Image (cartoon, rainbow, N blue to C red; front, side, top):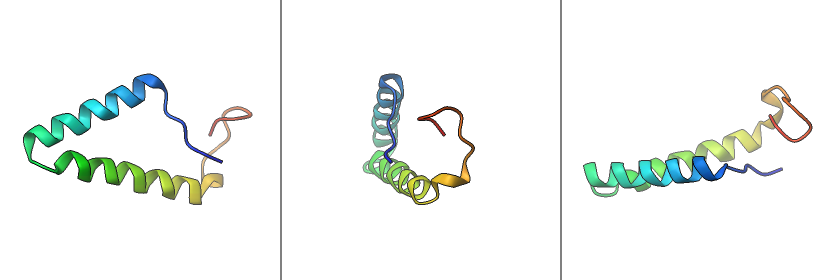
Length: 57
């Protein structure tokens, strides 16, 4: 299983990373790392969320 982000979500994530980096150098990268770690936790416990459709939780 893998996590896929919509194009809009990818753009929003990049905008957030840029914004946080403008506020404090490296903060955006810390944020991006937290998104990555959270995504990995979701994959580790995928059955913790209800199934919305055949390919979506």
